[in-house]
Length: 61
Image (tube, rainbow, N blue to C red; front, side, top):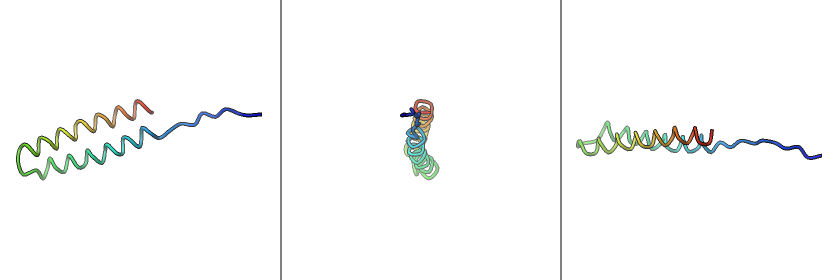
């Protein structure tokens, strides 16, 4: 007799961790950026990828 299992996936966690790595790079770029434009680009990347990480956790969580 076969039993049905409900196996979850860790896709949301994986996407969130990948986005967290990009967020860390963006934050480092923001702190160490030589010009205002590079600092702004680092801040923008950190904000966008942190939002994507939160959405991924909620979407696949």
